[in-house]
Image (cartoon, rainbow, N blue to C red; front, top):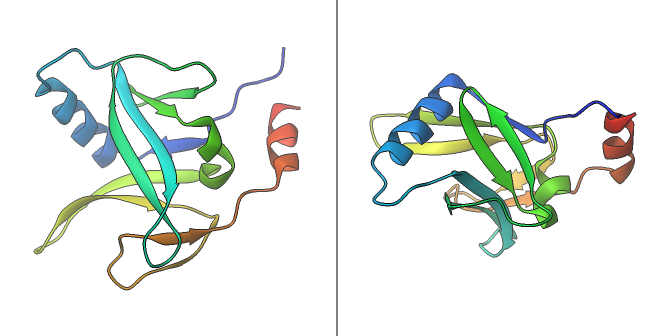
Length: 126
């Protein structure tokens, strides 16, 4: 059996914030679904939503007591990403520290991401 790998990881701050959001949810939540979509001035943006269950084909990571479900179309874009939660004087937000990101727009809402080499996934499973 091949060793498992994590497509992405969470900082302590991100895990704590996700746990807080899930605790306040009005319905049972199994985890957080993360993906990417086309759009924005830089080409792509990250997506997040409550996940009531794991969908077929999704990768799931469990990190620091939190389940994250990853859209299969996003795996190569998110490989190696660390999700953080940062609070500044002006904003509190989730931040994706993504080694595949090549640029971002000035407003910080969209990014340009080059997909990871699929061989990296194969090597990670070897």
